[in-house]
Each structure stands twice: as C-alpha cells, then as structure tokens.
Image (cartoon, rainbow, N blue to C red; front, side):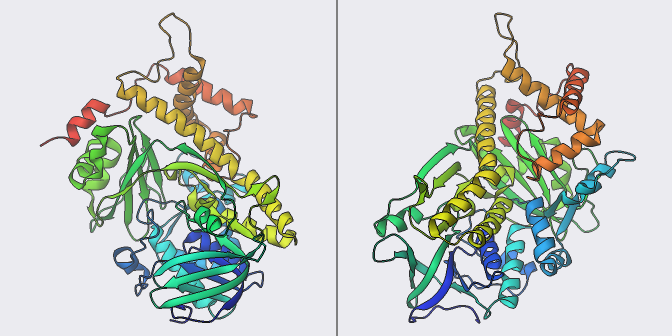
Length: 507
C-alpha cells in the first residue's frame, strides 16, 4: 500500500502529524498539504479498505469511529468548502449517489412562488452515509496526495506518545508502536483529531505537561440508529408532510423521545431514536425488535419502514456529553504547536448533526491561523480566537438546549405537562410561555413566510449565529402570530409516552 508505513523504521520528518484519520483529521491534512506542508496522518484502525464505496457500509470496520454507522447530514459550511476547495471530490460524491438538498428546493416545495436572495445559494445539505463519505474522502486523498507531501499511516497502532523538546515546551513529534514494530515521526506541529475520546490529557501528562482543563455538560440522551434501503419499485414517503426531496431530513420531537429520518445515498435512509439514558423503560429501543415496533408506532416513520428493508443492525451510541478542552492557560499554549480540532477539542450533542461541519471548519481555521501567524504562542491564540468566534457559540447554545430538553423529558416522566405555563396560583411562568410560543409559532411561520424558513435554514446550517434572529422584530411577530392562530390546537406529542411504551412492549 503506497502510503501505509507499518514496519519498524528510522525517524521520518514531517511538518505536521495529524492524529486521527477520520473526517476532521483528513480535512486538516488536506488543508495543510494545500499550503505546501508535509503531513503524516496517523489512524489507529488497521481494517483494509474495501474495493468500492458500495461495499464500505458492509465491510469497512472503523472501530475507532463509534458514530460512523449512525445518521449523518453534512451541513452548509462543509458542503460549500467542498464545492470551493475540491470540486472534483464533490463531483465524486454526487456521482456515487450522495444527495444535495438546497434551501431553494425546500422553498419551492413549500411556497408557490418564493422570492430568493443571492445568498440563498449558500444554504444546502449533503446527505450521504458517513462511512461512504469517509471512504470516498480517504480514497481521494490517497489517489491525489499520497507521495506528494502526504503519508497516511495505519496498521494496528497500539500506542502513541507525544514527544516534546528537551525543555518540555514545544512539540517534537510522536512515537508509535504497531504490530510490526516502532516508528518515530519527527514534526514541528501535532494536530489532535482523534475524536471525543482523545487521549491527549494522557499524552501530555506522560510528557510532563499539564493536561487541558475539561468542561462537561450532559447531552441528556442516548441514541440508536438503523439503516434501510427502499424496496424495488418503492418511492420515498412524505417527509414532514411534504414530498420527500433528495437529501431530505425530518426531526420529530415527542418530548420523551426524539426521532429523525435521514435520506441518504443510493436509495438508503436511516432512522434515529434518542431518549434520556435515565429513562429506564425507553432503553428498550436499543433492541432490534423493540426498535422496529417503535418506528411503526410513530406516525412520521411508519410508512418509511413499511416501504423498505433493514440493511443494518440497530447501533447504540451513549455516554454523551457536551465537552470542551482548553489548551491555553493565561494566554499561552500548554504545549507549543499542539492543536486539537473537532470533537477532540469541542464536542457537541451529535443529535444536532453539527459535528462534521464544525470539525471541517476548525480544520480550515487551523490552517488559516498557521498562515496568519509565525510564533507558537501567537498561532495558538489566533486559532483559539477563531474557535471562540465560529465554534464556541454552538457549543454554548447546545448546552442550553440540552438542559431545556432534559427538563421537558423529566416532566413527562413525572406525568406532568411541560408546556403548561399557568402556575397553580394563577401567575404565568414566562420561560415556559416563551418556549411554547416559539415551538408552536415557528412551525406555522415557516409554512407562511419564506423569510422565516430562510432564517431557520441558515441557522440550522451554521451560516448565522445561534439565536433565531432576535434582532428581526418582523420575524418575531410572524412567530407570535403563528402561536396565536394555533394556540388552541391540540399538538400534544403523538403517541404519548404511555401509549408508546405499550406499543414497544407488546408481546
């Protein structure tokens, strides 16, 4: 294999070693190679790549990426970067069956004659099974970059150690132990793209360096996913009450359970169910039979499973937290020229689907920061400032959203109505009232105004900061109007929790 160094070897010299060969790591390697740097990407999984992308889902065992066989949608920052930076690879994706959904598609599917803005072309999703996307990306890089300043190193990497210089202040490289011997990679920079279970604290501590401070907040969910393929002659059912479009995604929030439908490549799709890990009766949806019963009990997913055949087992993903590691202390890096990107730096609840896009964004911003500054401390501060501006707001937003969702879930488990804002003493709980107005009014407003739909899609796609445009009183009025027109409608989640549990526990 052209770029697979598995045997004992003398030291190899690179400008950058990227630890982790998943999407964020490959994005960083590509961006840094594009700036003329010599890059080694180290991936611990040794599973050989299948012959093609169609076999990747069945045969490629990526044990180091636990989320790889769960539902994914790739958001606008990533899609736009692919189109701009590597259009040839974007064409490879679509030729392989990946589906693109644009805001214009959705607007035309919702309104008779919507009026568009020039920036609407920036709003788009890309739907592709994660394992297929990663397979095609790695294959593209091996075909186009290997031997030209890029090495992809894998092969049962059993241990990795970060090396610092003699004073312990600056990166010197990494040392690896593989099934076939030891390998030393000398490098001026290390990029940790090894995911949410990064061993960076252990690496730094072993080198005598203070580990990064860790901040964590519960996501409040576990989730399970299953993939399906449409039966011969079948068409995709309605999605969110409308004709299903290529690349379409729909989310269903029952309060006690969240469900998502994700169209994907080559007539496939996935369904994800997420619930509170402390809600013991709902853990049952991690089992295959009960997952099937659950998807048939939910109106939005029933037609989808009836028109398809499962092509995977039910995958479970749990122990999830929103987490952030801080690699600066008093404005200086813990280890000069050591950078963390993607989930290794900031991990957010994967149910929101932002991980791949934020990981790609942080990889590109790191490359820009290395270009913008020359000194190690200045580079670290520049990268940190970029992450603060583009990534941290989404982390903070998700922490708050998860806390709100968990409060709703706990109320439902207690048999309470989390949307009742009338207190026993006759006063109004304004926080709950605002939640109800937004929840009921937004859905109505997105069907009445292309401006509200645009605002929603821009925010979902990370193109606008979190907050749903509080500075737009005209749109806020539309949401309030939507609430006033639908306030008396019974929109309680269906099925209710007890009805749902009876369905999944049926003999």
